[in-house]
Image (cartoon, rainbow, N blue to C red; front, top):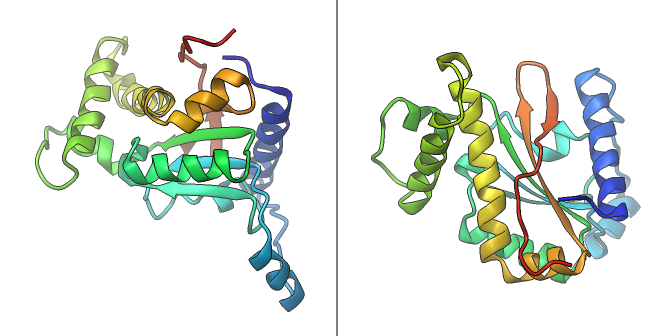
Length: 206
């Protein structure tokens, strides 16, 4: 799916921030009392991001963005939870974000547990959603060494598909071209965020 011009600009801003982050040269934002007062009354986020709850994965830090620039939902396994869909409704309807991103990451415990055969515990249907992505990865991984990364990627792609299908606000904005969606993987070893090639098909879009 081709990005809109505004979405492409937002993505470029995020990726430039990621470059600063991984090179060790973040902007080191500082906020005066007047800055905080202004932010408390206004927000114009450039993207809505669904990321994992992992303590090492913070979108604002990874993309070196200031307060008010990212509308985020963090949930184990970056799945299409009800909270993520609610966040998207707000991001799309209230703030007209041009870009939505689902960001998985290497070292994801939610994916790793299921690769190890752990199918119990909390999470319910969301846990089985991740398991579904693991099964998808099995059909696409060419060798055992790439199976884990492929499972992380498939979990991202699956969440993109679920959000585009189940979030009415997001689906409508994708069809009319006011918002675009991308999947990505944050590689914790290097700090780099890599954008995945889109596999999303939107029926009803001209």
